[in-house]
Length: 210
Image 1 (cartoon, rainbow, N blue to C red):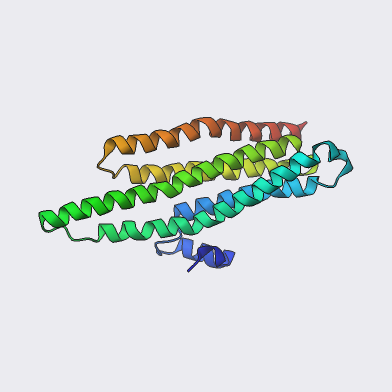
Image 2 (cartoon, rainbow, N blue to C red):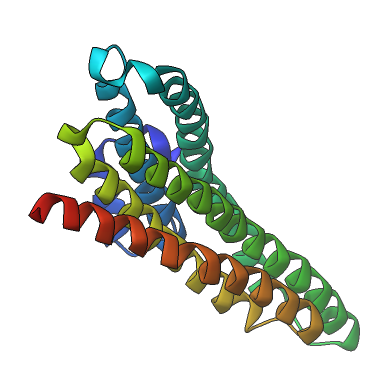
């Protein structure tokens, strides 16, 4: 079942249940997609307005990026669920003999790597979402600037949530060097883009209070 085809009500009902998916990763992807969609809305409310004719082409380019990114994030909702299936299967493998133990360890290592790949991809997408939100906040319609701020916050939340999903999998890896490399990749994205999201929020909040 494609989780993205569920109604909002059904998705949330499944999220609240003990079903294995969607979980934190799928929810993060959906939140990120919502953030990007909000940014895209700012762009749509900006184009065609004489006041913003000077940035029309830039906004149109941002809108094209936002649409592609939203679809990427939507796909990651299902990708996260798909990555959990082999991981759950790996945990269920027998380990009574040395041969079984070796096979389980190998399968588990591969499954954990796959389970990390999705949240890392999601983090990368959220970083782009924050960049888009920053551009929309700067160049988009002032009537929708609050939505650009919300876009940055949604993508920030999804970015942080995805980092937790990376960490919970790297923690279980026996190859600690590989785990450390993945953790460092996640840490670099957090270090660069959390401050940018906060900057967008503070800028928008200041403008609304002015």
